[in-house]
Image (cartoon, rainbow, N blue to C red):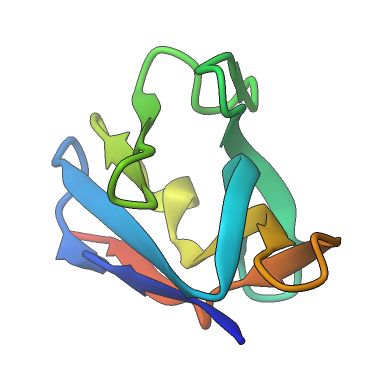
Length: 121
């Protein structure tokens, strides 16, 4: 069993900052790509940022220059530092990871339960 658990969401004023964290645990052999997605009410889930095991990153155009994704491979964690937040960033943010499980050595895609980020004055 593998679990992804997010934390760090909340209510913040426009222009403010939040840092999301996601911890992966369980029967993990290795973690490949990790990423953050978000889903606003009435909209499809979209990629926010992704990071490979080697540290290469990819961002949605809407967050470039404001959000930074990072990971700690030793702790099996991924982070999303969000600065200059806007009301349109309001969404449920989901952690995602491609993980090779320990016993079968097969790759699976896992999702966290989501954490709410609300940007409002």
